[in-house]
Length: 211
Image (cartoon, rainbow, N blue to C red; front, side, top):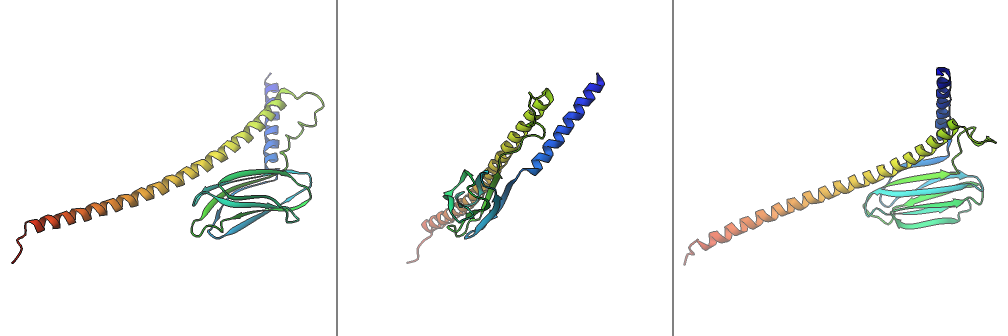
């Protein structure tokens, strides 16, 4: 009995190792970068004809949380163009093999820097090795590994979006704190000026004017 348990445990570890190797081999670009004011940054990815691809982006911090984004084919055809978008995603099937260009522009902004998140996924994620080769039904161990694989992908997506929302909320809170601090300093100075003015006016009331 213990031998069967150890064998199943070893098979489970093998499937987990296969999964992590697969995660490392998936063709995708996921990054967060700073986009200065009056600047434009482009990213390039080679895509094979007939491959389904997705570009997703979101402005994390900066200005009005908006940015211009465009997607060009190898023939310089505009496949997508978004003007002052806070977030969006675009999915397309490559009509030809070549280098596709994704550009983010902050040229309309004169002083605000932006922090932008981008996820460029090329192709469907491959199933676990050996799973798709089965002609018969999957075993319980294979079904469990496939279920873990799907759940881990869901967890990764949720973690990414929660980190983005956390960063955006933190930046908003810091900006709000700065505004409140300057507003408080302004109110304090105004109260001091009013107090000094009242003292001067009251002093003039009780001061005898020389004739």
